[in-house]
Amino acid sequence: MVYSTMDVGLGRNGFSTLAGNMSLKCSYKDYLKHQAMVIENVQTKVKQVMKRSVEAAKHHYAADEDGIYNVRVIFDGPWQKRGHTSLLGVEAVIEAETGCVLDYKVLSKFCEACTKRENILKSGKISKRDFDQWKSNHESECLKKTTKALLVKWKLQQR
Ligand SMILES: [Zn+2]
Image (cartoon, rainbow, N blue to C red):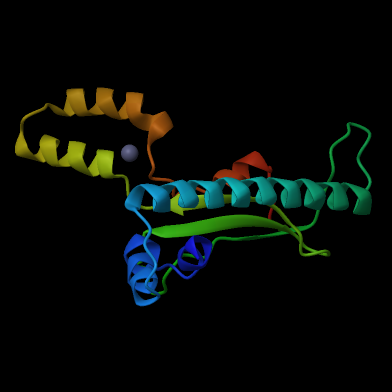
């Protein structure tokens, strides 16, 4: 039931309402425990499927002398909502002939830490120099991911 509510985007509050309507009790701690199990199982399954997808692509194409595969792919990056209002999206590399997803990356236009620090900068409590220093240290853990990271990783070329 936790998986189902996560799958349709109801989250904890939707789960509580649904469980309440069915006279079921589940503490917040138990919900989080089940949610973590679902996430771990889904991530494991995704890794297995993408590994098989890469193997299928390698089987379908021949490698160059240098061991590099030139694979025809489709690259797409849909967002969660239409109309440029979504903060979340995903970009995917899809092998063109089999339709197998070879890789994906979750995108976000929002990072709470960045927003908080930008507000502190605007209030004048820190200097631009302090902000830039913080920003360079924060770069690796920043949740704002809008760049086409997969284009670089997969060395994709438009044809
Ligand atoms: Zn950030």
